[in-house]
Image 1 (tube, rainbow, N blue to C red):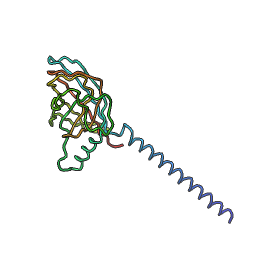
Image 2: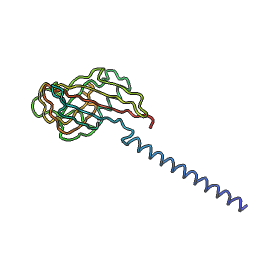
Image 3: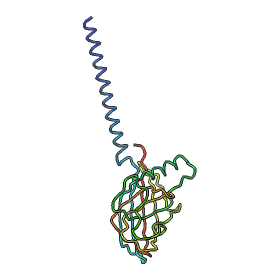
Image 4: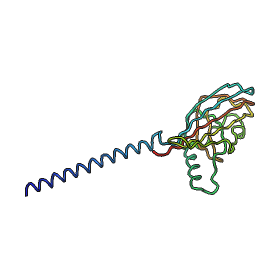
Length: 197
C-alpha cells in the first residue's frame, strides 16, 4: 500500500516536472517569437540610395540611409489591406530639411526656412516607378525608383519620404546634400515585406 502511494507521488512529481518543462519551453518559445516579432528581422524594412547627377550626368553626391515607417504609413498599408474606399497608394516623393530623425508619430517632413513652394519639394510617382520581386527567400521586395528634378536650388536637404496623398508613409534622414536646379536626383528605395517568421 505504502509502495503504491509512493509510486503515485513519484508519478505526480514526474507529471509536474513534465508540465513545468513544457511550460518553460512554451515561455522560452513565446519569448523568442516575441523577440523576433519586435526585432528588426521581422519588421518592414527599407533602404534608400540617393544619387545626385549634374545636367551632364556627372555624379556629384550620393547618400545611403535606412527607412523608418511611420504610424501614418502603417495606416496607409492597413487601409489598402482592408480595401477602404478612397484608400490611396504611394504616389509621390518629397524632400525635407529635418535636423534629426523624427518619431513614428511624425506626420510631415520639415519645410525649408525660406519660402520655397511645396510643389518644388516633390515629384509624382507613376505605376512604372514600382517593381515587385516575389522570388526572395523570406520577403517580398518592392523597389521604388523616381527621378526628382529640382526647379530651384535646395541647400542642405536632409530627409526624404514617400507619401500616399497627404499621408507620409516613411522618413529617411541622411547627411545634408545640395540639390541644384537642372540636376537629376534619383531616389531608389528597396522595401522588404517579410514572411514566414
